[in-house]
Amino acid sequence: MTLLFATYVLVWPVLTLAVLIVICRAVARDRRIAREEKRELV
Amino acid sequence: MNNESLYQFSTLTVVLLLLAFYGGTYLMTLGIRKKNEDADAFMVSNHRVGFGMGAASMTATWIWAASFYAAATSGYTYGVSGPIHYGLWGALMILFIYPFGRRFRKLAPNAHTLGELIHARHGSSSQLILALSNLLGSVISLMVNFTAAGALVSVLSPLSFQAGVIMAGVGVLFYTLWSGFRASVLTDFAQLVALMAIAIVIIPAVFFAMGGPTELVAGLDNLTPEQANFFSTDAILNQGAPFFVAVLAYAIGNQTISQRLFAVNEDHIKPTFLTATLGYGAIVIGLGMIGLMALTLGVEPLNGDMNNLIPQMVSEYLPPFFIALFFILVIGSLSSTADSDLSALSAIIMADVYGKNIARGKPDPKRMLFIGRLTMIIATVLGIVFASFSLDILVMLVFVGALWGAIVFPVIASCFWNRVTNTAFTTSVIVAMVMFCLARFELVPLTGMSGLFFELLASIGGGVIIGLMVFGFLGRILGILAGIAAMIAMLIFATDFLRDYTVLLASLTAYGTSTLVCVVMSLTSRQERFDFDTITARVGNYDEALDSGDRDTTTPIQTQPAASTGA
Image 1 (cartoon, rainbow over the protein chains, first blue to last red):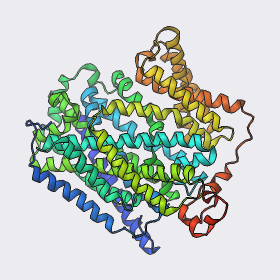
Image 2: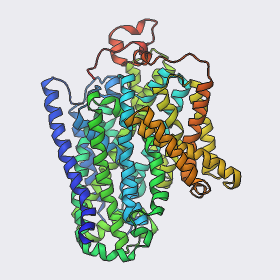
Image 3: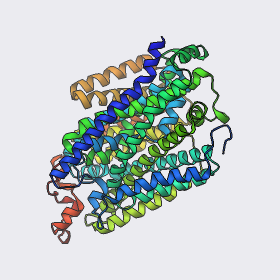
Image 4: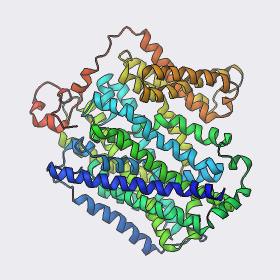
């Protein structure tokens, strides 16, 4: 029960971290592509 | 409303925190600032916003201050399943719109608002109904976010509620005014990174400071059987179901979403919205867990105000540095949504009101820009003034969601079914709004035959929601089958029962009524069937059309297909 509830509460920040990493990597790629195409990021 | 029971920052600290936040955000926007912005970029950037920026912007926009407070309130009120019943459905609003978003984009690749597409499909009356609902939503959202800023500043510092509202309003306007949507998207990324990083730290910090999993499990004895039940009927019917009903309505009725659908690189719509779904769900459900923690500890919300739950828990268990982080978390979330609302409002007035109805096909892009910026200033002032009313956030969310519910079927059907007419669209929305109000405010007794009548309409509404969701992902046949099955299930299980849940009944009634009226009127109409190919040609970029020299011709500017934007 303790483990279950610990997982239930802590899985969300872990998932948040995973999404944050995905987004940061994708933005770095967006930036690189924008530079290669000589256009603005937004 | 300054409260001595919560940690108090000095006035100087709060002013410095806000200056650092809004000053830093403003400095970021200087990097993309152009002396002469163009009207299209001001509304939707270059239609080629990448996956990373798009996902960050969508997530940051959808997370507003109310997300944290309402998720924590839900956790505190409904127990174990409470945070899920707020955060999951909010996340699904992003997920379920993207199949329809791809269709919108295919029909009008160069649109700036959903209203432009509907204008090309039906004309002004339908478009203005959609624009009005979008305006209403964004103004309310602006007001709620400024209210949250005022409340936060007033509970954590000696400054007044009004001071917090004004500082947030001016701060957001300051960095959004010149570059519009481009500034909003760029700053959304930075705000989201801060927001996520803080959430990642704060949730476990509060959890372990309160005693960790052992204390949480020990505190489960404080919960009622319903609160301890993960499949609580109470939580489903009072919290989950009204939000589930609003899933499509919020997405369709919100220009901040449409704007990003039209701004993101067309090939990246799916990954962008999937990532935003995950990001939103994780952050909001995670922070909602703080409400559950408060419940298990037997914490009473300060002054009976549920919005105090998270500040209370952070104040109680964490040192001042974390309280400052929490402060930035809330300011970041409300600012990212408020700047998107300002961009959305300006785009609606620029494109839907000025472009399509005042300039009538001959808009001047420079004047459009001026109108867009003026809209932002007026909207900020209105948001600040309305914020002083301090309306109940959850009630407003459900009410506006139901309002949008009336337009969901007519909008989606108009983009897929060539028989929907302008009259059917307009009439169905008006009738649905009347029926919604009758049920929501119990202007007719919800007993006996009238109760049964509304339950029948609501059952149709339930079928429509499920049907549309399945249709979006699995196609027409399965959508119709799922819709019919859901309607039959509702007729069996909801009759003589749903009338006790007025909010849910009224929201479903809005869906059911608008669908029924729209379908019947469209089927009986003898109007010529619509050719969807004409939409692409009718919705174009304003500046490109100007550059191509079409403005002096008699052809309306928006009827010129824009040059490829590479979307």
